[in-house]
Every structure is written in structure tokens, then in C-alpha cells.
Image 1 (cartoon, rainbow, N blue to C red):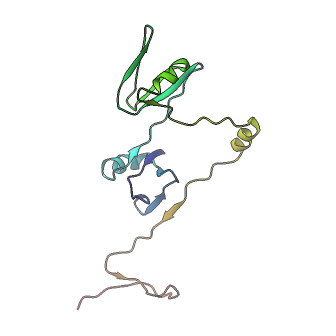
Image 2: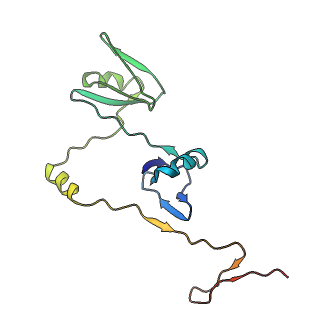
Length: 154
């Protein structure tokens, strides 16, 4: 499964007759085999994972494209997704040079983390859209139980 950013105005991702709804951030998680079509044709973008930073280092994201910075004899360049890992001491000075912290880090009590780990993650809501052949006349009232009849042309 891959996480994709939906284009503006999208309500979800249709894969066959299945609709994958967007989360509140406008992202959708879809099967790997649907990614190429949704990105190439549907205008979706792959959401890149933020790299992990070792202790004493911080991950920043460039807002102006690929760039690099240096500290002493060390040089740091952004990766293909615009992320760079630098010593934490450099963060304050780099924030004024086109870098941002990519995610808000919130300290959570260990008990809450353990409780969340025990709860199974709920799958995203999936809506099955029935396939109706072209030309089929659908009953107008929801209470009708008659089977749909093919339309006739006179």
C-alpha cells in the first residue's frame, strides 16, 4: 500500500469499482498496483516518507527546491524529496535560509503510546460502486424490487 496526495477537488481514488476515500489531509492509501495509473493519469503525487534522523541530528525540508548547506568542513545536500539531515545545532540558522521542519514533534506519555500500539488500526473506508451496464434503466424509486431492464430504442 502507498500513500498518495490527491489533486485539488478530488473526493477519493477510484480503482475499478472501488472508491478509496481521502483522509482529512487530502491523502489516500491505495494498493501498490494502482499507484502508477493514479500518478501518471490521475494527477496524484506520492507522499514521500520523512527520513529518520540519528541522535543529535534533525531532518529539514527545503522549500525552494534542491539546495545544500555546509558547517565547518561538512556539506549537506537535499535528497530527491527535498529532505536533508543536519546537526541539530544548525537548525535555527537554516530555518531562515529556505528550510523548514517537516513535521511537528509532540511528546506523548509512554502509556498513551503503548495503548495506541495495542489497538488495531482501522482500515480506510472503502465504498463498492456497483457496475451498471450502459443503457440499463434503473428503477426510479428506492423501494422498487424489480430487476433493472435494458433500455430499448424505438
